[in-house]
Amino acid sequence: MLLGALCDLKPDLFDGFRAKMLPLAAGGECRIEIGRVNRAYVSAAKAVVDVSRLPGTSRHFDDIIGRIRRATDLSDKVRAQGEAAFTHLFEAEAAVHGSDPRSVHLHEAGATDALIDILGTFHLLESLSVTDVSCSPLNLGCGAVECSHGTYPVPAPATAHLLRGFPVYSRGPALERVTPTGAAILRTLSPELCDFPRFTYTRIGYGAGDHDSAGFPNVLRAFLGSDAPETPAETVISIEATIDDMTGQIAGYFIERALALGAVDVYFTPIFMKKNRPATKLTCLCPREKLQVITRLFFEESTTLGLRFAEMGRLTLDRDVESVDTPWGKVRIKLGRLDGALVNYHPEYEDCAALAREAHVPLKMVQAEAIASFLRHTHAAR
Image (cartoon, rainbow, N blue to C red; front, side):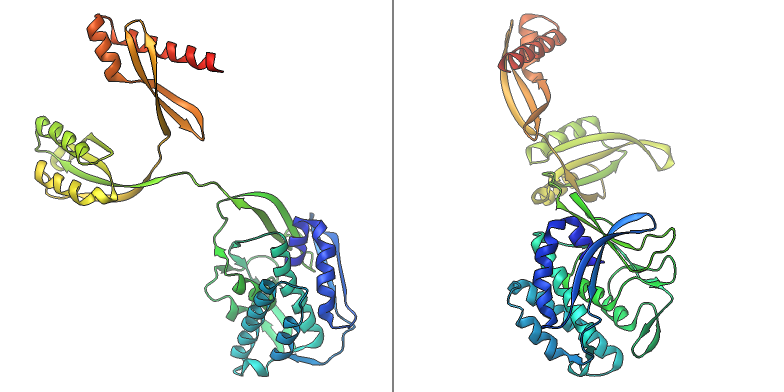
């Protein structure tokens, strides 16, 4: 299912993938094909690795690691990942049986099948230039699975051992939905575990399982994309105090001091406190490095006996200033840009107020003329 989903993301990778995988059969008869099937009306790529004609000898850990190391057509990274995955797989089987990993063996056909599944997955991920992998919670399935040692409940013992620490659940018809091989691949990839990552995807691949369950698509879905661009956020500390016994004069003085000491914003919110007393919530936002000095200001200049503070993100537009001409003089226009595009503009209040006082005209008239002048200038520049 992993091979099918990854090939479905970019079908032109299949021929190169097959050419890299066939030598893993070590001269034995092996057939690797890919086609399309429907699983509960979902079209998916079905990867077929037919090793049924390979001999029935056993393969131990050293045999398989040796075969990986001789696969020089594969990159060093893919072979290292393959060794790690098989180490996880053999250690899990050994832990289940209470034996040494080097005494565990795989049937020749099963060993080759697992080699192609594991090395093929890592090779395709490399071919797709994947650098990070995320994985949603895993549906283990339910029921029982037939193994060489007998019938075991799903998940198989080795799968259960390998998926310790992964979020899992069980849903749908009785079916094994995560095998030890798939679990070993995931253990090696160490994916980010989340419901769905924050990223921008451009391709979706579907890999089909063998069984077709009505109303429950037996498919593995892979999304390929890139990290979503991060919004340039800064971290600030919000400091709050609720006060019912401070005068307006002290409050105004506090704002002046806080801004002078490096606060990025200070504001008051009318509230009601216990005993229905009207009061004020004093909030101050500051950079982390200013936390100590602003906290000290709260206790020195306000009447509060305690504080609350929390870390939060703060986003600001890229800011710039331009000057425009009005009939009464120059006014600065504050500009806000998002990804280089102008989204906000506003005349500087102090400039407009000074011109209004000097010319004895309404403030709103100066502000309106400044905006009109800016828009005329901006339109002409285009």
